[in-house]
Length: 266
Image 1 (cartoon, rainbow, N blue to C red):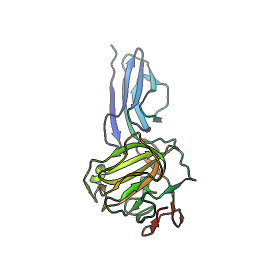
Image 2: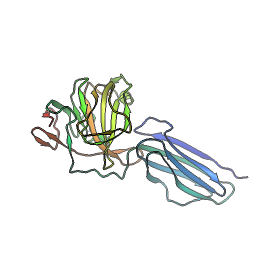
Image 3: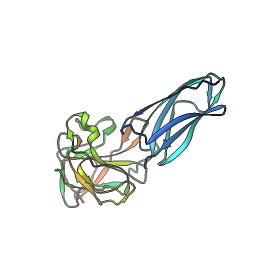
């Protein structure tokens, strides 16, 4: 009788652990077949690794791959060499596609009402939180309840609006209200720290540049009310890469939003 051991350890980095992504192995006649399923409305990037005995895999491990929204596919096929075999696997996943290529020529709208001004409270490479995965994020010091506008056309792929909790401790990170919009080049924009019930768009909705999408707040990991804006893509199952972006202001193109500077939206 065949002995078959499969252990799946799910480790999620940028999203809470849930059942929206499943990667399972099953015995099919004389093979072990691994299937991946993504139930989310966005692409995910997955890093998958396994150890095994008395099996022969059709691909070299570890695997790094993208699964499209609402998709199930075979990712690995192993031949059973002996009746007694073992298989243990683990994976990490994060939102976005590692294959996205940012359109560096695009000039973003400042994410607030045309004609109004906001001060940058933290720019690129900011000392408080803008480093590593968030190197090219920009914080705008908006008062709570300030209107937030889409900086670029796209499709809403994730929202959170139920939180009323925030503070200057990383334990608050999971409480940040946000809107994530996917652009036509596959990159994602995150509008974060929105107020409770401050999201005006729904997952799957197409939004236009300069469309009102929500209201700023102070939820999540923050020292006070502001809007955190970042454009990024996934790089592997845990990490992301942010992009230096340009904004159009009333005074011209802003290439490097500078802390303490005030910019008028155009």
